[in-house]
Image (cartoon, rainbow, N blue to C red):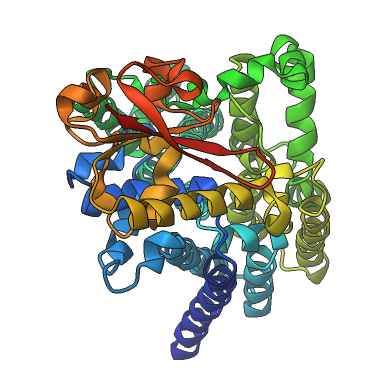
Length: 523
């Protein structure tokens, strides 16, 4: 028992340390981090260090839990500015969850009585997969989301095995935390709800009681199971709608505001490649199928084990297929709605969902080195496939930027933003600068005096945008379109031509002239 605890602790520490060292090297020594990860850090940063520090500054577009967790390391920002400047707070959070993912899979195998050597090999092959390992140190929200998804599925399979309601309670809270991390949890929850229907209907059909009694009991079982599983997530969703209404005046602000994913993806409608995908459901379906296939080897391994054991046509196979298909189904719906970039990583969640199912699957068959080997081979194949995918920008363009960051556009944008922050600190250390944090988050976090910026989450922002001279704004910082800014939307000609009350003061450009900021002085 003590040996198992020691091994579990060693696994956590080893994976956490490896992920953190890799993230520290990339973000601190090479000063690079994915912009989405930095924006999550920025949302946490505004809560503590903006002009108007308050919890609502965490924002109402992206799910707040990742940024909320990053507030804890950011408490030490005055001592270690790199926690914000280099995004190290995000690296810490993602590295912690990478270690927890390894422990979760190892412990799941133990609980199902699988051999120790298999549990160790299985958990390490998952965690050291190049694609999964990359997300463990890049600070994005994916690894925390993966943990909550796998936690949900592991406890759901325990419920399938024992029908004990406590497991469904744990699964429900895991699903709620997954929702507070990423919106993809909604369709996973729907898939689990329909899985309950299929499982309980199958159980009812094998019952020898009268038909009317069977249906009545099954209905109540489905109803009570749904309440236990879905109540935390549904309550969380209603809270999110309420918070959006209270603070923005729009319950669906996260869905249809100028900062939402729909707004950000609006520019794709003019892209020739995406316009074809958006207008043709068959093309969209093909894209989803192709991208999902890269992550599907473990599912094929599970299905092969079922075929060998003549278990393919059992009711529980419906559950794994519903959960698996929920991920590409969401992307397909978003593509039909013209509101998804369909990044390669959006399809990755089918892999951890299947991995979380595997301990349950192997517990239902006779212990066999051959069948364990099938699962291990599927994980090895996935390592090869995803290791290759991230080296090919035509397959995984966004993920490939980490391998080519020194020459990529993300790096150029980050370096420009930091140079702007340094110039503003030197030349305008105490001036009031109006800017939209949706684009300027890197500049704000890189500044030695972030409170000189009047930003989107500040109480006076809307009034200041409407009347900059009347609100004592001294300077306005604008990104080059299509870089988003409420100020650009309010004054669409201002970036190019200024206005009668603002004069161009300074222009900042990167070496390729791809990114640009313009600083206007308010007359």
